[in-house]
Image 1 (cartoon, rainbow, N blue to C red):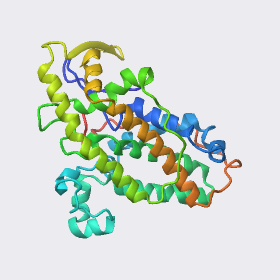
Image 2: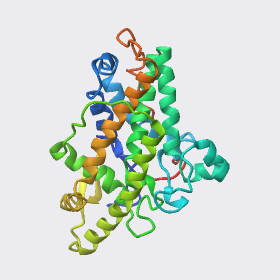
Image 3: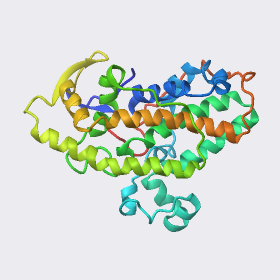
Image 4: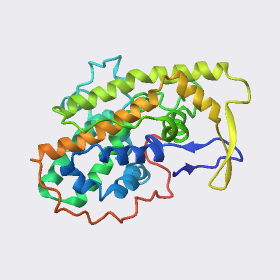
Length: 313
């Protein structure tokens, strides 16, 4: 597992998180491969480590590319109330109504996923194995982000309700402590998606509808929890840090009714299905002669400059 910490002062809880966190993003991409049909496995399985290692490249690009940040979220509550009929699902119509600057300010995740699937379809048609792997790794990341309720909510880290840190609690701390021990990962076989836009917006709307539960249940649990037992100190990367205590994490997972597990499993299924759909739309080209040349490339390394765009921490 990989973690990024920013030291503010000794023993301050300060785990930075992006998307699902390194652990979950890598699990999602890795496990999605095993739901693919044999005709795709001939290319994807040999590149399993590439897809796993590069699952978090999109997050690291947020340090160096100004346009990257808005691709990971949409503050959909800015556009009214569910199911947000004021917000056009078409990018062109949304730009006419709100302008591109406004859309980028509040996040473009669902529109960007559609663009990435089109790029992957073209890469399949071109027989470009390197591009297929790179785009597949990134699509897995963005699709994973779309399944996170706090990525579809302006109160993305509880900063509006005095719940700072909830982002990492939901999408990083719960999976890291519990996923490999108790989550049921099997998500079925990849399936064809007739309408990428409709499917993506459905995922985002489900996330948006769950955000209130994510925030409300943590607030109730926190208010009722014994003083001094919500956090614990643990050693990470040679540093003593303050983090959510294991029992608190387990209790939060319980009161959510397994939401994190369900969304992670859905992300695995959707990731594989988006890959599969791009391949089918490209005419199901034969992949067993393709070889990716960048599978040994190091993952994108973050720059030392501050992250560009919204920080979820």
